[in-house]
Every structure is written in structure tokens, then in C-alpha cells.
Figure 1: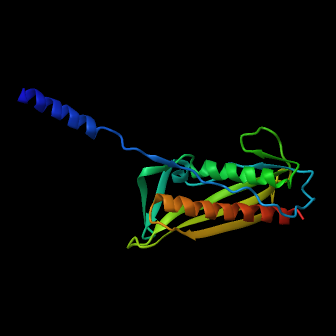
Figure 2: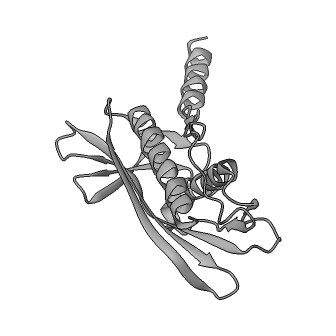
Figure 3: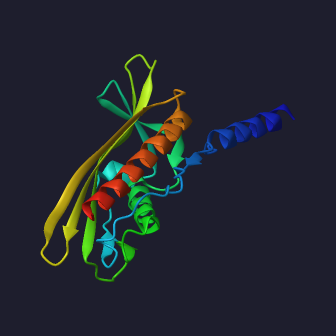
Length: 198
């Protein structure tokens, strides 16, 4: 009887050790675009949003962070529900579409032709910790190029930056800071495009 209990305990232990830990999925919550004065110059033009260019690390669901400005790690039990590359591409599209600056706005998956194209380069999308883990912040840096598709010339270029301190030193603190930072950049982007079209 003791032998049977011993075998059962071993199987029970092995079963517990192979159980995959729960992983929490996080997404960015983007606020609705606020009303602003819209230009009329681009009202008869179409715009296509290109898929964002980024490093391979931003194409995965891993939630990475940097320690002491050098070492990159990933959270074990937290991940994005959508890769940063896809997220930013789609959110730029939604904000530009809702701005009503253009006759039509299409995402990169569309086969339709357009008058203008917006290129997005993700230079940074990361949470940072100081070497003593006493402070943390997120940093987003995006470069944008507005291109004339007929002449293949750059009409205007702009770089956007947003650095937000986290309120808590964990993944969810980073997510909340990313919410603020990306909302700020998306608003700036629409205002820039609106200014270019004036």
C-alpha cells in the first residue's frame, strides 16, 4: 500500500511540474481621437498606411524590458495580445481614418492605389529599468515619412517621441505608461499630417 502511494505521489509531482504557467495577455487602450480643425487640401486625396518597419523583437508577442540601458529581458508571465509592429500600424490607420483629413485611408493589406503613402519606422518601443530597479519608464520613438506615390518623393518627415514614467515597477505599470505614450504620439501624428495638408 505504501508503495502504491509512493508511485502515485511521484506521478502527481511530475504532473504538477509540467503544467504551463498562466500567461497574462495585455493590449494597448487607444483613446478616441479628439475633434480638431481639419485642413481641406487633402480632402480629395487617398492615403495608404504602410506596415511599420521595426526590429524582429517588436514583431513578436514578447513583452521585453531593458535593465541598466543594456541588457534586454522578457517578462515570463506577461505578453502582448498583438505584436507592437501590428498594433502601431493598425492604430495609425484607425487614427488617420477617423481624422477625416483624407477622402479615404487604407491599410497596407489593401490592394487599392493611393495618392499618398505614410511610412512608419519604429525606433523604440520599450520599458526601461534603472540598474537598482527603483525606477522605470517606457519610451516610444516613431519616424514618419509622407510620400507622394506618383513621384516617389518624400513630402514631409517627422520624428515623434514620448517618454512616460511608470507608476508601478512591473509589466502592468509598463502597459499603462505605454497607453499614455502611444496616445500622445498618435495625436501628434494626426496634427502633423493636418499641418502638412494646409
